[in-house]
Image (cartoon, rainbow, N blue to C red; front, side, top):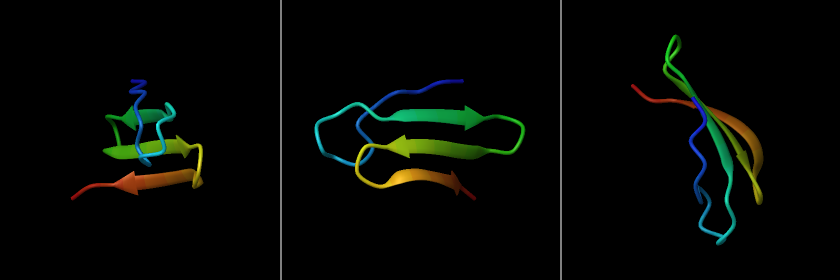
Length: 40
């Protein structure tokens, strides 16, 4: 499920995908690059 938003606070839209099967967020941020975050 794509969820675009400004996740790094730089005023530009970043791409985020939520994987329901794993509960992981995959983020492509304009300042930090690609990262995966899994919330408890």
